[in-house]
Length: 214
Image (cartoon, rainbow, N blue to C red; front, side, top):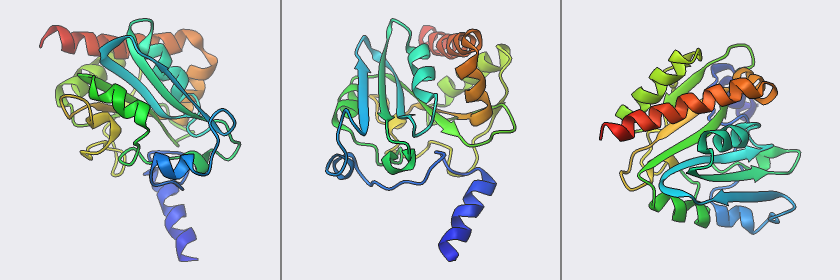
């Protein structure tokens, strides 16, 4: 009964970084039980190694996050996604501070800028929480999203992306950006390709403005 109450309170507070609960504590733990190509797949496109856009909980884990990350990456930024293929996506969720898939770590180590795309659970309101340790890049991305018509919010407890081991903070600078996109916004981006491109362009502009002023 106590476990159910704790889980319910998390959902009521929208404090999960995922729509699901975590069942694996490392990629090795997952790989020992799941089959790549059947239960999950990994997509990686290495382009400019300095900028990496990631969806560590793509596919059926946090729906539409891989598509958003791929749109942001475009044809010039590097792209990585771990995508769950099982119907019960919660079984394949590895929390961001535990995410240690080897190909992801190798790509992250080469990147100056790391932006991760996640799914927040709110189905009623459209918003994006912009977190991570990279203050200046966070600010630029938030400015561009708002200029493009997207509402942003400060991350709530549990969604701040400030853990030093969070995959977004493991690039060369040891600081990155974590985007938590509400379910309602993701549903919009999934069905409206023009809005998806507008969203992607806004994030890209934020990255470019930061890069140009370094």
